Length: 85
Image (tube, rainbow, N blue to C red; front, side, top):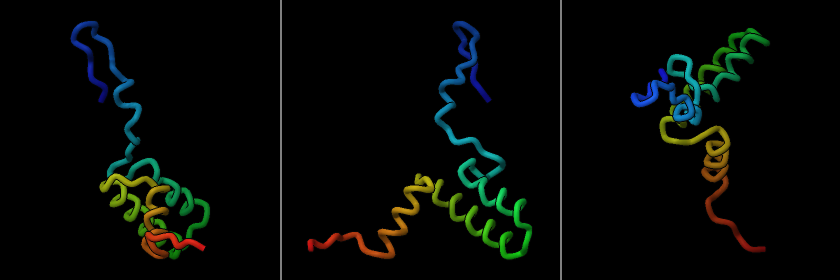
């Protein structure tokens, strides 16, 4: 879905390189649970993959990547405040 420059008829692919590739509604960062299901096919793994893909999907809609989601989860579980020792 690259757009064509009307002046030189070139494809401006550099505009879309910063976007995360998607497979239907699943972004590329949430593809590792599918690979985990292929390596270890079990019902528990399928449930884990489904929950983690939905979690990463909704986090990506809010603008969080996997690393930022882990930091946000740590901040939620521990505390936002740091105490001096």
